[in-house]
Image 1 (cartoon, rainbow, N blue to C red):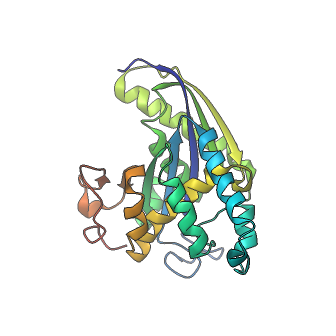
Image 2: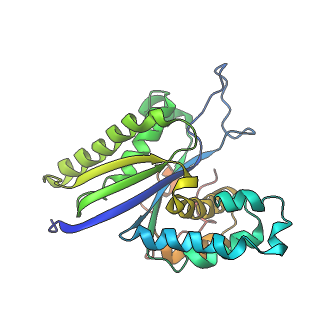
Amino acid sequence: MRKIKDEVNYFFVDESGDPYFYNRYGNYIVGTEGCSKILILGFIRTGNPKELREAIVKIKDEIKNDSYLQAILSFRKSLNYFHATDDSPEVREKVFKTIVGLAFKAEFIVARKIESVFRFKHKGKPNLFYDDLISKLFQNQLHASKQNVIYFSVRTNRARQIPLEEAIQKAVIAFENKWKTKVESEIKIYPQAPQAEPCLQIIDYIIWTVQRAFVKKETRYLDYVKNKVSLIVDIYDFENFGKNYYTKKNPLDINKISPL
């Protein structure tokens, strides 16, 4: 095992899609309007969030008086916080060109919503599905640095913090059991609104590129930021088992993954 580093790692976590399989009447709704076929969880990791925050604030300062952009309907919302789905192409371009030069790395787990897996592995409970993916996302992340600070993007319900803490602890235990060692790192977890944390706006943009690639087979955005993405795991692509961990050595080819 590597010696623990006397440093702080910061993780900023977001999601794309949802963990739901059924509506309130018990009907299976995956793939219908408003219910995604996949759930993506991911983070950006950095040792210097101050640099990232300042870069996002700088973009807003540069564009706030741009009369060309002011005519765009979504512009006022973009000044509040950047959100790749809602931002105009003009704003999106400025954000991408900035964040691609910043010091961070991103990792993702893409989970296909397979009913049999959901019912048997996750007992048909959306929270168990979500928390299991969080555990897998962090399983190999929390042992190397003296302190880990994790910010989860929270847009609505803050009551999820305790289950998230339990999911992170599960990741630690899995690592300890696998490597027969004790994780000594301190872990702090904070729910945070993206409006208040610029780094969450960055992970929002990067996870959007992964979502576009898998759902729309549009890879131009992911290709642009590919040097920032160190791992994508298509965890339930059973047809490509053994080859579904995508890295620089095994780059993602969206045409070779199993259909959603």
